[in-house]
Structures are given as C-alpha cells and as structure tokens.
Amino acid sequence: MKENEDKNLGTFVDKVMNEVSLESPSFDFTANVMMQVEKAKQNAVTTYHPLISKRFWALILVGFIAFMIYIFIVIKPESLGWFNNIDLNTDRISKLFSGMKTTRIAAYGVGLLALMLLVQIPVLKNYFDKRLAI
Image (cartoon, rainbow, N blue to C red; front, side):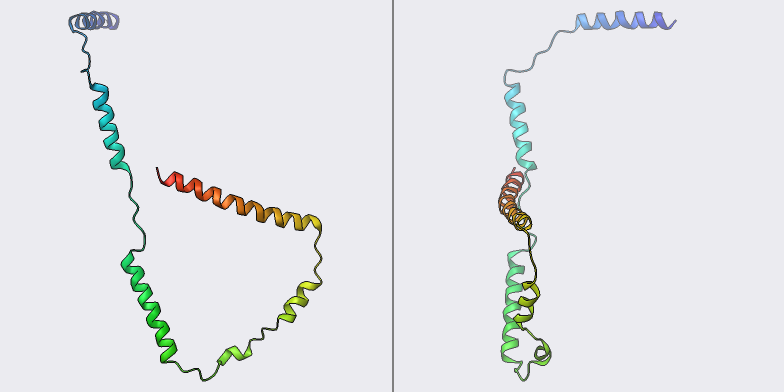
C-alpha cells in the first residue's frame, strides 16, 4: 500500500515538474543582493560611545579643582600629625638589598622578560585596535 502511494506521488511530482517552466533571476539580481548586504553591514557596525561622557569628565575636573582649592585655602598646616612617625630612611632599604646576590641566569631572565613585555604590549595593542575597528 505504501509503495503504491510512493509511486503515485513520484509520478505526480514528475508531471508537475515537467509542466512548470524554469525561472531565471533578473539581470541585476546579484547587484541588488550585494547592495542589500552592504546596507546590512553598514547598519551592523557599532559606533564608539565612551563610558564616561565629556560633561562628566568636566564635572570631575571641576570637583578636583574645588577640592584642591579647599585644601590650600581652608585647611591650615598646623602639624604633620601622623606623618612625623614615618621614618623614610633610605639607608635601611639599601642595606636590605645590599646582601642579595643574583646569578647571571636570573639577570638574563629578568632582562628577557622586560624585553618580551616591551615587544608584546605594542603588538597586542595593534592587534586589538585592528580587531575593534572592523
């Protein structure tokens, strides 16, 4: 029963396909499609919007200037307070590192690390600038 239905369906499809003429697209079909693709590309491009607007940066600057004026005019330097207790004797720091011995391999390793960082940072920045500019 199922085979009979399949044969009838197959002959019906063959008959319909023979009766229908082959349609072809218009002459400028490709140009029209490409124009629509370009329009869709232009609409999909995201524009850059800074996280902090210029007005807010101006507000931060005005607030910082007002704070500095307040510090210099209103607050009188009577005493240094807890700054007197801080001992910034650099002799201690130099004595701390004077007994430290490094090997040549460690020095080469630190130098190579610094060189790699100096090379990689501009390369990565360039890569991400190109990637985000698409």
